[in-house]
Image (tube, rainbow, N blue to C red; front, side):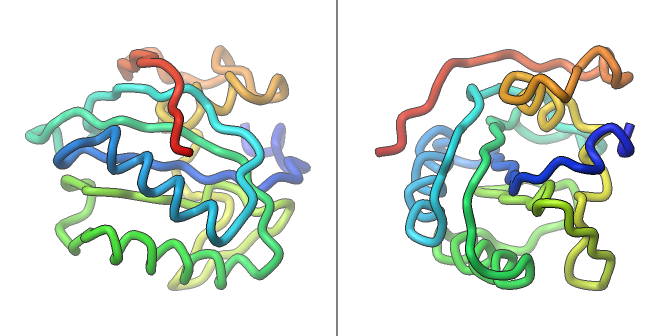
Amino acid sequence: MLQQVKNFNRIILSVGSNVGDRLKNIEISLKELSTICEIKIISSLYDSLPRIYEDQDNFFNLVLEIEYKKTPNDLLKDIKKIEKSMGRQKTFRYGPRLIDIDIIFFNNIEIKDEELIIPHYDWMNRRFVVEPLSELFQEIKLSEYNLSDQKLVKVGNINYK
């Protein structure tokens, strides 16, 4: 599957929340992101069951395409500042998240180091990433990914401005 989007020359982020007011958390994160980048397009908002660690509340998720002038590592630093300013605290892997912003793609750049892996190491196994991507970009086809066991419900659109 990865080869099909090898030339996916876009910067794509995934945003999720399952703690507190999920909608408000995502709206705030989008407002904050708009101060560091240009938001080009946002998918619908989706409600998804937690994966791996299932003893937690459902997530709200969406993906967005952005325009960003600096490096992928700069974007990661900016994202971490936003998450921290919103009150995200370190928990455990796959645990509850007040806000979670992941870099899925950064143009055609591939990075694999301790701080950052681009494309995101597990994007193609996450329906809450693939389905919103397929909604926005015809070159991503949900049917080509084996994700039918993951439940996802489209909630609607988000207005963050």
